[in-house]
Image (cartoon, rainbow, N blue to C red; front, side, top):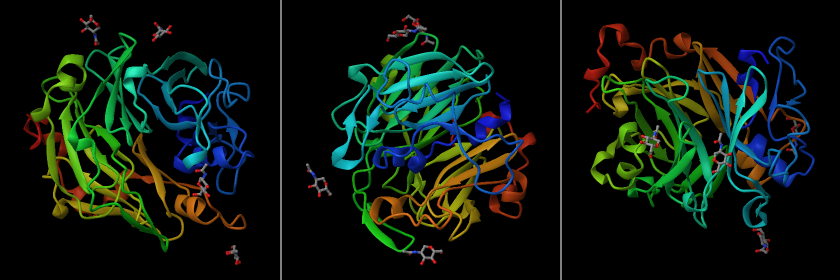
Length: 364
Ligand SMILES: *[C@@H]1O[C@H](CO)[C@@H](O)[C@H](O)[C@H]1NC(C)=O
Ligand SMILES: *[C@@H]1O[C@H](CO)[C@@H](O)[C@H](O)[C@H]1NC(C)=O
Ligand SMILES: *[C@@H]1O[C@H](CO)[C@@H](O)[C@H](O)[C@H]1NC(C)=O
Ligand SMILES: *[C@@H]1O[C@H](CO)[C@@H](O)[C@H](O)[C@H]1NC(C)=O
């Protein structure tokens, strides 16, 4: 499969979750060929194929691919929640599984089931971040945010094992559970740690993991030096930093590019925001890079790849609370050059190349 096509693998909050409710969604992970589709409403093609898109086939299939990440080593990391259904109809058909595909051959490199100790009875893993260290492709870790079980699960590629970290910073802010999106008001009071992004490699050889609970406006940070060590990850309360509040609303997803530019979706603003991590994390240094009250209703995920920003929107609140109107376009993929997106904003004013990573204000 072409390296570029990964961007079109569709698996955001609703395009995947919807399958659970409407049994008519036949494949949980799909792609669109960039060569043949420009505009219009293209048909989705199951990835890697139909046979491996069978819900409940725990050994060979994908059940609910909730989040994906393509890394620099042509591996596609697919987080499968193993659940079928939604709300009180949810059935855990298969264990939580991390599937890693080789994008050059479309073969499964690894299928790792989380250990019973990695999860708890409330676990819902909402996102994944993949950390490539200074040691190259084998020096890889995945961090998985347990939104409802309030934990962070860490997987070591090299040792093929996992462990769980907990911290009170993974919990929601009880004052931030009220949402109004596209005119619909609802409460998600329990949503903890959700979006995560990784800084460039710092002078000490580690990255910083930024993360935030969904029902919160606060960003937090911790060095991967802590998370990568199963002993330190369990007992390093003071190594976690709290950053100031964002005051822009709720965010499910965030991403950081190799220059330290962070983008985050703003689900109740139909928008995506930015922060240049050479500047302090403060409202004055945040800006919107895109907003659209029709095309970006619930911008479920945002990615950066080769200088392009990619956003997927899916009208999730309508789907969950009322119903989708199938005569309208409900799912969109939007893309634009990152340089154009940040032009003229506060995120665009840093001379990246003159700054030593070691001098980043949040570095240790
Ligand atoms: C599940 O939730 C629905 C809608 O909230 C409710 O009508 C139904 O009674 C619930 N079922 C069970 C078994 O709790
Ligand atoms: C793998 O496990 C060994 C033995 O426990 C440990 O020394 C090593 O640091 C681990 N490597 C990684 C990358 O976690
Ligand atoms: C990784 O560990 C799991 C057990 O947790 C095992 O089933 C699997 O075969 C291992 N994979 C590799 C590549 O060692
Ligand atoms: C669905 O969308 C179409 C096109 O925007 C609109 O004409 C129609 O009234 C909508 N239906 C409902 C039930 O809202």
